[in-house]
Length: 322
Image 1 (cartoon, rainbow, N blue to C red):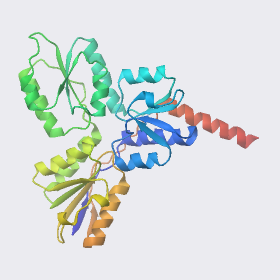
Image 2 (cartoon, helix red, strand yellow; image 1 turned 135 degrees about the vertical axis):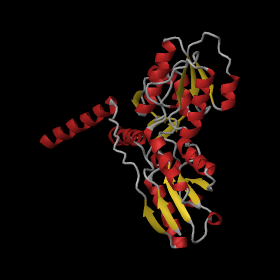
Image 3 (cartoon, rainbow, N blue to C red; image 1 turned 45 degrees about the vertical axis):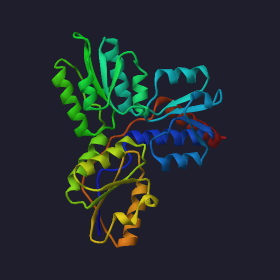
Image 4 (spheres, rainbow, N blue to C red; image 1 turned 120 degrees about the vertical axis):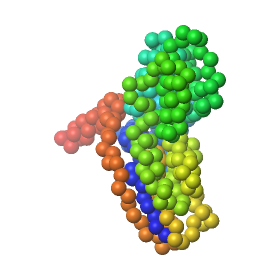
């Protein structure tokens, strides 16, 4: 067996930033720290933080007045922010800047009188947050059938936006059809699907022709991880999404295969290495790290986290002086 490790894979800059925010909050402010929804869509990451005193909630009211509440990487609606203020919560905004960009675009288009056709998955945390910015102006588009059913007023100003974690190919087809039906539709100055989602899909697409099986490290509720599985399947390659080695099934593999292993942007490298170790142990697999696009993007910590770090450093300096 040969294992090919796709590159890039795993954590993106937005996930790194969000996890770092939560790490700092736990270290400097102490537990419990509350997080609105999952900090990122990965079961291993969530369980690790739960073991250290993080409480993941779906309603702001689940956090006690005066508590610390972190907004996840997927962003939240203005209503959630207002509810947190009313409850007197100390908030940390770990929204990925690329998601925040979509929020800003939705606000701008809505203010300018556009009807926004938002391409994405119903119920996803990111979509709920964006819709919350201008619910009166946003129509969710999930498929080509949705595009065909659209019947906007004749003189409506239309704009399209997308979730950041979608299939590049599928989204391109939806946008192309929107532009065919509505030639005057406008879009963002720069596409919304994030660089990491695109890079991971492109890396996997290059390897699918070599693969007998694809294994994607990631959780079932991770949109970008599921899109990697969909991509492999669309190329005719069997593909499986697992959180780690416990999710692997011997019936998927046999000696002599080429197995491509990758990871969604919210999946830790530890999950990849666990999968690889399982394949090496059972099948004597050799492992090859593939070349890929280098990702050097880094997102600055939000100002409230920088203040926490600076305050802790000042306190440490005072203690050292004394």
